[in-house]
Length: 335
Ligand code: FAD
Ligand code: NAP
Image (cartoon, rainbow, N blue to C red; front, side, top):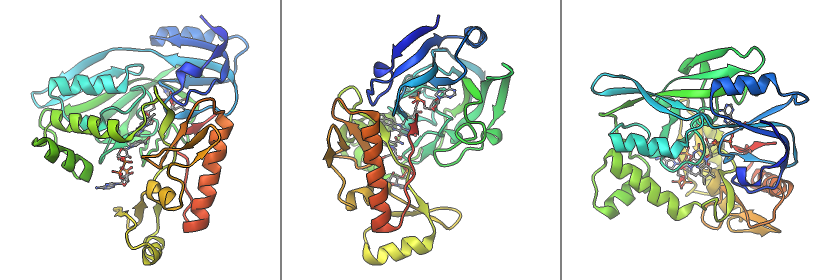
């Protein structure tokens, strides 16, 4: 059933009180098709999962459809490898905990990322050296216009750094209804990020699926604001990837600047370091600000409008460009 003039405040982790012209939830492909067929005056659609990667700068003159398709089912198992199909409305971290509980490795580094399984391929979610493309098998998505259900392979998703075909060429054309992952009981454990090594050492634990998941949960709880207490959408900006010549030039002035060589010879810089070095960490502007512990995260101290947060992001972008000649890009989806 479509509800009119529906507040989205509790459905986005920034806590912005945007109002949707129409709102409905769906828990199966059939109910989704029914809603699409009976959507009346609503031409524009917005698909919402956990609302943890979106900033509303205005009311939503569209029909908001919230994905609540559940279910985790093993579709193949060969002793070591597990192929598991997950409903797009399943909470990502609940799926991670289910995998850890069963000894299925591959996504433990992605513990505690908010949001839904259906949104995970949108920006190829990643953390601590793992991205979902590493364990991705395929996904099913409903084409909004034809209502055909299409299966996408990994190649067709065209995953990149916080990118996929669904954020670019196929934007607003498909609704992801399920994602299938290939996990393993004998997966390679990824501990290259210093924070994981330090946390495991502090706990006196060897790397394992459960110990890495526990370590990541502890690290994230210690430095990232919980949206329940302080509105935010995680990293507001992507880490910029720049030519090595620019990275080398910056290092002449900032010898301690972190940089990570990429396979194609470019270098990834840490956007958080650039923002902090530009003096923004912990800065408050009106009702919003740059988080005190993590400069990549913009926060709503209460009562901020989406436009206030957007303007803050604009000021940060301009200042970082003026100081370092590096153009940051927003990671969060702007409505
Ligand atoms: P939403 O915000 O609901 O939607 C995001 C976009 O995807 C929107 O454009 C929406 O229209 C579209 N969309 C959602 N579901 C579907 C669907 N089923 N079909 C088609 N389109 C859809 N991200 C990382 O990559 N790594 C991190 O470590 C990380 N840490 C975070 C920490 C915090 C505290 C927070 C608040 C966010 C963090 N994020 C991180 C960002 C966010 O959690 C992820 O991007 C997540 O995948 C968003 O899921 P969601 O369901 O909330 O998406
Ligand atoms: P961090 O450990 O302080 O490191 C800062 C940045 O340097 C990270 O963003 C990371 O890039 C990069 N980095 C660090 N060690 C690296 C290594 N060994 N190899 C390659 N790159 C390295 O980062 P943090 O802010 O606490 O975040 C930890 C992890 O969680 C990161 O992977 C980050 O992406 C993820 N995270 C993402 C969000 C989000 O909303 N997208 C929010 C919170 C945390 P990468 O970002 O490319 O990994």
